[in-house]
Length: 241
Image 1: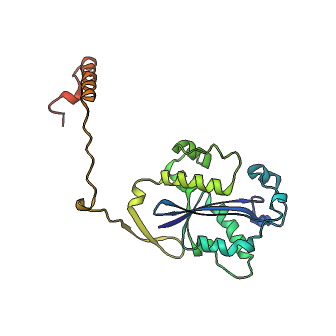
Image 2: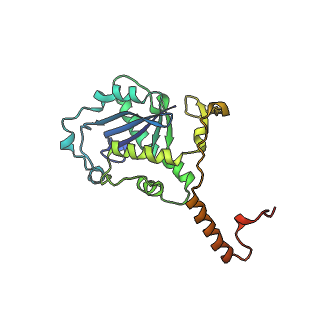
Image 3: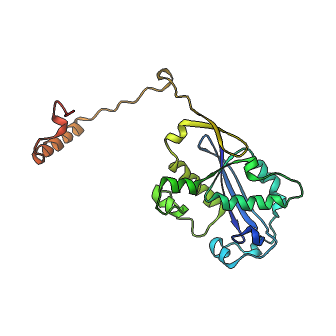
């Protein structure tokens, strides 16, 4: 399973106002593991950057003046993304901008959802944590992900942080299933992944308590015996039910 965790920065909030992408950051996961492959591009939008957007990411038009246009990096970007399941926080925003940029290329490449699956980690977080804050910073606090370097939004750093958050947020059961999707990204078949049999698994490591640990445990049970009317439950021969 190949996933690409992606983030963009833009000149503003609306493609309807001809706002453009100015930075793209993406990191690759295969079977939920970092591969070390990443893509990071600054893009010259060939237009002004809104003051509000600049306050978020701190990227100036002057800095971008000698950077390539989207058309110049499009082939490399499409090659990196094609066939992957994209993980994006607030995916409709980034996908709309990517589709807008792709639509202006001389050669048609199709839309993002035609070449990739898309997972919206914000929608996933809202489902998992209803009624709570689910911004990337809030999720970092919830899952203990270090985001201390995130003083401003930056596409590559945010993609790396989101990858850590996503893996923690979807740990466990979600890794037990694989799915087949159609061209629209909808699941058409799902199946459980094969679990190795006992003969294929490594032997479990058995760790026994030391004499000191056993003595401390008995002392703790003695304290429980004194504190509880019916004594320590661990010392009863038979438990109710």
